[in-house]
Image 1: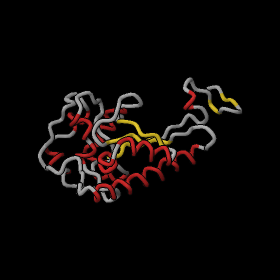
Image 2: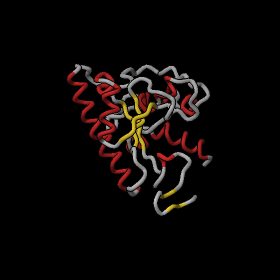
Image 3: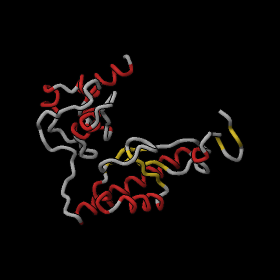
Length: 192
């Protein structure tokens, strides 16, 4: 890595000069989506955030799940950048709840069904480890931290047919509450 006194760590893309660190989370923002994607982009700019679709920088936005990250990399420490992302995402989440209420959207969970999902990513680790038995045991659990469910955790493997892993933790409790699924996936992926 090349470190420059003025620009920090040098990168081929000028947007990544400085720390080069991009901290991001995937978050469902159905209220903001209804209010308007362009308005969400403007609000993210005000919060010094960068919204992307879940398919990456050029992959476009699908549904109401966004990849939200810190916009800046230069002139701030890694701690400041992560905190900026956390504070901004918390602000967007709170505003999204207000928009959901305004538009009478109610709870926008990925799935309220207890029915075993049709996993589109047939060769994913989710397809291998989310068995009907495990689903039946865990599908009614909602995490205390953020109200996350197993249905939300595996939504990408259910919706898309190209996932390798196919699962995301919505919070720390996800790893504990859905351990019968996460543990074998983590062990197989990391070879431990």
